Structures are given as structure tokens and as C-alpha cells.
Image 1 (cartoon, rainbow over the protein chains, first blue to last red):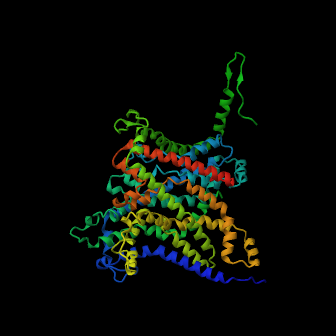
Image 2: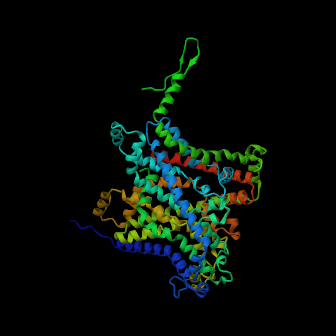
Image 3: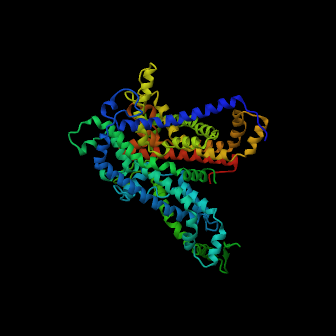
Length: 291
Length: 321
């Protein structure tokens, strides 16, 4: 086995690489550490000067306030509902739409594909969309959050490309056994498409979990707001939602309450995202470099 | 088999094209299940994408909600004249380009660099951990992230300023400083996206033929040289395409990020087209004017993106489709 010459610069370089990446990981984590620590620290520490990366004394009153706050939990429910409905709808529509578009023999296929793809390049903009929602009578309805984004052209193309790769022989043999197109879709294509559908579900789920602007535009009723928007009110606008549940409560804990709210709102994603890596990787690849 | 028959002229001189129509109709009928599947999607795009596109007519009217689109008076290009002659639009446009340019300048190489570095790691646990950590910010909303960032950069409590103080500097109110705000936008954007964007480059690097490296080993090349002469050139097609496509976004600002970090003190350097459209259109209800701004932005974006796609196609025979 031949031994290769190693360079002294290699060792320095390797140390450099490990150092830089460690630094990057630490720098990425530091802000989170601070938030976590401050969210569970007493007011004196929160307002004190110095580094706050590790909690020195604990005070969970911020979290207690969060748990007592009905608005936050209503909003949580709204977000979950919206995400579930939207992901379901998107999965159904995207899959149903991608299958026909993957068929070479579809009449005027180029036209229909172009029809869909054009929307990626040009849109009416914020104002016409706003007016449309108003005209459709969807103001203050959860559907104003779900319907506008129901189909993403990007995801549609990913699914289409994926289905395109499925061997035609499978469909043809089913056809010979007398199956119609819908049966083929349901029994053959769908089970094979689960990986790409998982990718669609994840992209869509993350999008809807984090969405807030549409809720700000279209939902006036506070009880129907989504979590991120309520979070924004509490953290950035310094909303007095905290005082809603306990009158006379000092506002000294507001800072840790704000941060506790923040933590509570990102907790689901934090727990889930490390396991989703392979789906996002796959989806990004198919979408960006065209498989 | 040519299913589209040419028109035939019957004896009395009338053009007969019934066969063509019937054939097309029959083709649709043959594939009826497919079109039943496709119909809801098409309907969706018509309602939520094409009708708003029609709605840009508002930009050419003096739109009043009560009168509706058809009832509002036509003003032609007046709104656009107001845009370019007004005090606010040009600075906003400038901000948009400057911020996006810096994001491109610093943000584009970052994921490439990260991918190259990650590729050098031999310990899978370390590699996976760094990857998982670095794309954590990508999955969080800008609301959560801006809350974290504002806290982190706080002049009274934030560790950055504590560190500065220890080093003898005065605390800087980063978020509210016109000198620092754009840098904050750029660096936090990188913080959020670098881990995720590195995925594409990592995949490209994984596709490089290992024999190239083995040959280099035989010649005794150092790691740095291997990166420079093998890794980077091998993924240069991906880099170029990504560069062209990213440049196509030069006018598309990130409303989410900027709206959440923007504050009154820095609006002179931070206000961009999308936040301006929102303030003018939704908050001040200047629907026509804001629609004009939005239309301008979309048209420019369209031209730039199409150009970028065209160049990308010419360069590598590949587009995103």
C-alpha cells in the first residue's frame, strides 16, 4: 500500500478547519443559549450586566406567565390547525396536479406547464392579493391563510419530476390488467411517491408554522391569530398580553416572559428539525440541480 | 400519426375545420381523468395568481375600494410619475439594491466555503453536528430570530456589547445605528441561511470523482491545493448557475427579515421596496400608488430573472426546469 507524502500545511489546515467550524457552531448557538438562560433567570440577573450563557439561578415565573396566558395557547392551536389543514390541502392538490403534468402525452402539456410556471416569475403583488382576499370575503377566516399558498410551483415541479422518473412499465402493466388512471394513481404512483410527498409536507409545514404576515394582514380577531404573530406582539411590540392574566403583576418579569414565549413557540421545530435533514436535502437537490 | 388534420374546403367553398376541433376535444376526453385531477390546481392558479395579476390594473387607476377596479378612474402613468419624482421612492430603491448587493457579495460565497470546509472533516459525528447546528436558524421564523438578535445585540445586556466593553470600547446600539444596520441585515441573513444553502454544494462536492483526489495524492499535493485545483473547479458549473440565479433576485428583498428588524432610526438605510409597499399600501391605504411600486418591482424582477435564466441556460445547457 503506497504511502503518500503528507504536507505540514495539511495539519495546520486541518486544525484550522476544525477550529473555524467549531467557532461557527458556537457562534450559531450562543444567541440561543442566551435566550434560554434569560428565559429562566430571575429579573435581577436579566437586567444585570455581564454574560448570560449559563443560568446561575433559576426563576421560571416567565414560563408560568406563559402557561397561564390563554392568548398564547389559542394562537398555538390556530397555528397547528392552520398547518395541518394547509399541509393536507397542499399534498392533495400538488400530487393531483403533478401527476398529469408528468405525462408526456397530455394534450397541450407545454401550455399547461407554462401556465403554472409563469406564476413563479410574475405575481400581482401585495396589494392586488390583499384586495382579492377582501373581495372573496375571506377576511378574518383561516382560509385566507391556507388557500393563497395552497400550491407552490416549486414543489409541484419537484413532485412532477419525481413521478416522471417512475418507470412507465408499471403503469402499462396495470393498464393491461384493466386499471383506470385513478386506480393507477392511488395504488401504484402514490405509494411510490411517499418520499417526495414527505418533502412537500415538510417544506409546507415549516412555511405555515412560521407564517405571520398573512395573519397580520387578513385576521383582525385576536383569538384567531397565529402563534408567530402573537409572539411578535409580545416580543417586539412589548404587548401587555402578560397583564391580561394577572392584574397588578409587576412588569419586571416581562423580559423573561417574552423570552419564555419565544422558546415555547420555537420548541416544536427545534425538536423536530434534526430528523428531517434527509428530506430537505433530497428535496433541495431535486429542485435545484434538476435531479 | 398526425392527429391535427388541416382544414378542408368543401364543395361550396366554406372552410371546414370540424375534424380538428373534434380531435382535440376527443384527446381531452380520452385523458379526462388527468384533467379532472389537474382542474383544481388550474382553478387555484387562476383565482390566486392570475386574477391578482389582472389586479395590477389598480396601478394605472386612482383606485377607491368602494368603486372597485372597474369603477375607479383611469390615471395612466401618473402613479409611476409620482414614484420617480417623489422624495421617498428613489432612496428606497437604492437601499434595496445596496442591501441585496452586499448580501450577494458576502452571502453567496459563504455556503460554498462552508461546504468546502465541511468536506474536509473526517469524523462523521463532528460533521453531522456542525451541519445540524448551522441550519437551525433556517427553520425558525424571522420573528423568533429577530427577537433573539435584538437581545443578543442589546446595548445594555447583549454579550457583544459586554465583550466590546471589556475590550475598552463603548457599547454600540447596533440595531438602531445607520452605520451598522445594513451589516446586521447581511450577517444575520448569512447566519440564517448558510447551513441550509451549503447542502447543494455539499451534494455537488460529493459527486466529484474520487480518482481525481487519488491522483493528486500520488503527486503529493497539499489539501489546500487540492481544494483550489480539484474541488472548486469541479463544482464550478453549480457555482455559476447558482450565482446567476441568485443574481436574478437582486430586486427581491426579504420583507420578513427587514420588517422585523427595521425601526424608525434606521429607515433611511433600511427601508426597502417591500416594506415601503406595505407602509404605503396597507397602512396608509394608498392602494394605487403601492400597486404601482409593486408592479415596477415585479416587472424589473421578471426581466432580471428571465435574463439570468437565459444566461444560465446558455452557459450550461441546464435550467431549473
